[in-house]
Image (cartoon, rainbow, N blue to C red; front, side, top):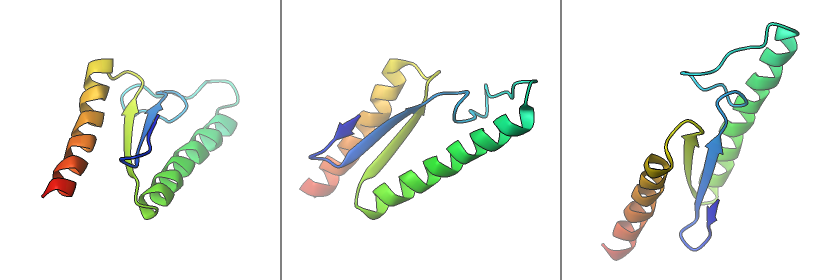
Length: 88
């Protein structure tokens, strides 16, 4: 989700695909391939976040297991922080 005026990008990362530290696991079958694939996903996440931040965006990443209310709070904090900066 993008908040273009505020330049806030929100990503909801899947626990499996992005290797959540709480819930990630590798499949038993073809585990080397999966380990490489999931590691590349993590590296791409870091690169994407870095590129967006270099362009002046605030990046919010939440795990899929986080409740919608908690995720909304994270976004609200980012938007509130930006509002406070622009008014102060």
